[in-house]
Image (cartoon, rainbow, N blue to C red; front, side, top):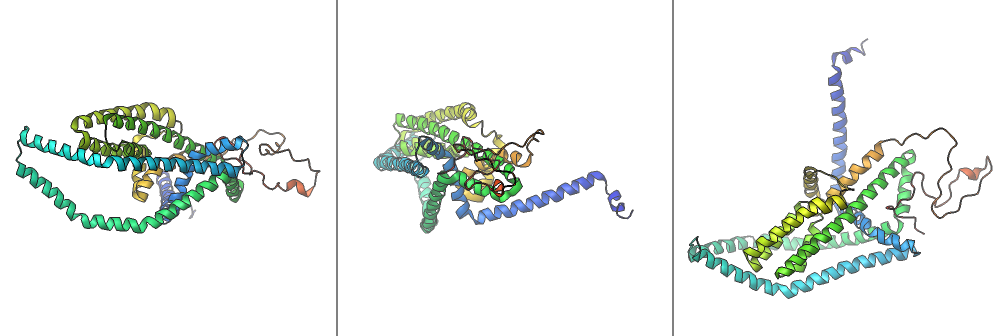
Length: 403
């Protein structure tokens, strides 16, 4: 009776709330320390996260080359070389156009500034030239005051350049081995979970499918966005249209916030080079194209992998930006989508099999069935070397076994 007395003094609702609060506190502590560990290891965690995104984008090419009969090592090398060639070609195009058109941009900005100054003096505002000169002097003073901060930022960036280079090398190595040995790495990872390996395998494959669809769909939408805006800028005769198109392409990977940032820069360049009329036209085309992307392209291409409310996207972007800056904001949405799709597979139990004979274990694709073993043979319980882990059937979006 003494053991039941304290329980009877607490209402059942309050006892349940206390139990839930205790569970939430424990989960919060675990999540806090996990996030702190990721933040401390951001030098490794961020390149690995970007490598996963890059692998999800490039693996269809590697898989096609393997299905054509090419060995995994050669298929992986060709995929990496194609990716590097695309990046190098894009960088060369942007650099060449920037070097060629930057002087023209400076001249057009100076001409636009003179036109705006004349309009401020002769237009409806009737400002005096002394007032305009004072405003310009104030802006110059502010820039000079920030010169020390700008210089220290440049020096800090130079000191961090080595870390960025090391992260880039790590990213390339991780991407290469994920493309080449992704499925074998996953099978090795599953062996550490024992009886939980089927659940972990289902969760991992659901996460990989979601990540692949999201990355490939986002790249397709960003490419359409960058090409359309590049054509518009080139048609208006705006200098640096190629770098601006590439900036819009990469900014499209950050939902909502990215296009606002890139669109603002492109609008300012258009305003400085061509004047207010062209800037307004560009803003109108950008808004129409963005609405077309949000209501047509995104639901059709990316909607099957990600169906988040805009408020959820804003919150996820905020958390990612606080933890890891721009790179964290870029990977925050796919990470949230992967967790959202993988958790149900990890928590729910598979449906119970109907009573009957135990089915034979699945064989890897393309392998010959193992010969029958006599009853009581010791070798019947020993798995063959290199066989796939239980509960991990091959799927289209998962890397096949390396040869």
